[in-house]
Image 1 (cartoon, helix red, strand yellow):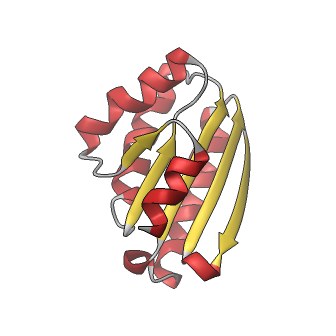
Image 2: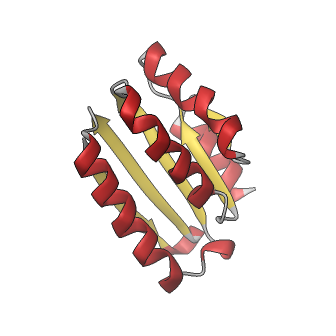
Length: 119
């Protein structure tokens, strides 16, 4: 999976675009890097937008890692995920969210995500 991260300091927002298929080892490594960087940021005051539009479905072994991510995302002021175009990937993201207690939002467009963050 390719992950592109951009900071938007004027909106106090981290924007991550995810593309393609996630391999377990790579995904775990990226999550660990994200976890290590979190204490250096005022995340309770920040928003997170993750654009999953171009993301492929996950292998089942990735789902526990996804659950771990949702717990991390709950630390942000706003956490908004843009639904993937692929129906299976969308259902995977939404199915895991309740078990992780995810309090964020799922939307269908990047514009909807920004509207939540800017509100």
